[in-house]
Length: 136
Image (cartoon, rainbow, N blue to C red):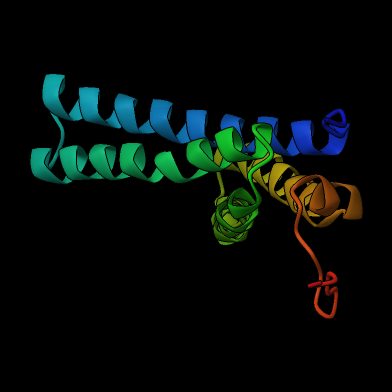
């Protein structure tokens, strides 16, 4: 009925981007584990498969946000909260991982702000505490 708020579309895009990054990273680890010469092939395969499976959460959340499903905000928020410690660990590294940590932190905080925005909440049909509708 009403157009989708830009904030909701942006939150869906960020969740999809994170899911895609997890899937690509997991696929790369999986391929390197199977085709390369890793120190521990089983660990590489397990890590790759785990990242691919973890990618499902933000991808499903992104689809739900895009389709304006109220249930999708929870998984999207959980994804962002899980991303913050990962970003922190990347920022503690003394390597090229620092820029990745900065990007991940910015994306996670931005997505969280978009997800708790009143326009997003209203577009998803989520009512706040004490918001009771007439039951006549």
